[in-house]
Length: 447
Image (cartoon, rainbow, N blue to C red; front, side, top):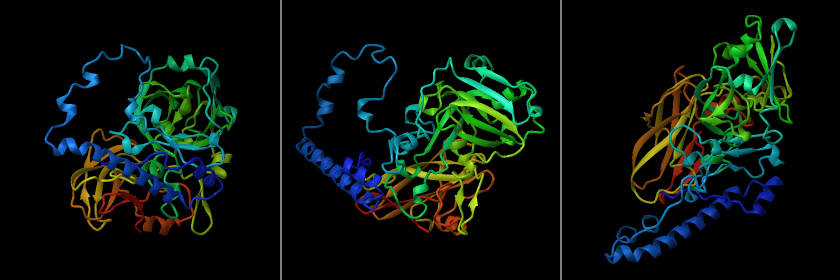
């Protein structure tokens, strides 16, 4: 399988997108694809004589440089780096999506990842005023109440205070509420990195927020909401219902994938709120306030609301509903020959565990149950796979997830009937990849 081309927009293309011109995105991508095909064809032509003359594969018959020389010494790179041959697999910003890079998004390369854990260096980013690398010795976390009776003893914690407490570690996905948002009206971007790449999954380590609230004497019976506030320049603030806090799910986290959080992921402290849109996972967490009602802050009263068909807005719609996507084969890739392939992808639900994933190769006419790979955890990515023998005919690949509540991922026709086509957030419609006779895989929509 040939991978999708990278950097398919030139600086001039990016400038035009920034001015609002998006109509040529597909043409730019197709041009890059053609260049990749030409380069691949040239490589094949050069290698062909060895295969046809019976000489054999020189990389089998001859000594290789790496097998006949001294390698790099131990700890040559004190913090390990990916192979130079994998340098194309990086998170990428979508040109023209926002006016300034400090308030923008970078997308995780889902098409090149295995299993369910996203490497910390490839975790998607969403910033509202850029990221900061905060000195942990100066960072403070405060708990107080909207009224004195909500918190008996307000406290300020240092990082040392928090790191002394008993930790817990859990694996959860985090998805931006705007993930797949560009696809609401029609096909907008070519690859799964850009359609679904505001999605990542990590093992997070920290202290349950409930533990800290109890340490401060919070009245957890009177409390209905907490307000989480970030320490960055945008002062991101979000209302969190008390129920997930009481369950112990919500973490004040400092660890990610076995190490401290990366600065762009909230170092040294962030909130982890499993199952809800990523904006509520407040980074650079500096304060939690206990109250009895939602706070209607700027990022939940004006932003992160859903435009409905009748012109009204749906507010406080934080739960990320059941969703899935095939990551391979996916948009921009090319099947190089007929025969056996493994269809693989990811499924997730903000309401619990994934129960089942069905896969279709004929656009939803027929479905086959896929295999779910373990572990299958609540509010965590689940990897699914299905063997497929491609006969060289056109195909329409889809996946449909069902969670443990019985919720079935909708198609675009169902979702638009309920939500219209002018929204931005919470698009969990079934994704379709079209495989052409020449093996090219493209993004299409089926109602």
